[in-house]
Length: 82
Image (cartoon, rainbow, N blue to C red):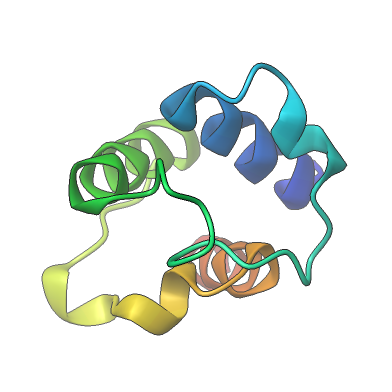
């Protein structure tokens, strides 16, 4: 399973990017760089990650650094899946 591809697919869906997320690499900045990634989109993203990967994200497990870049988000998902 390619976590990066799955995370990018979820980002694409939540932010309605029309496939643009598939061009993102691990260094692509997210929070603060994508105008569509506001607080409501983050909530939707968290919910979709939980549903898709089958884990629960507690409030104290995440902060802004989790969503700093594609890589930080993929690392977070991989750590939750481990």
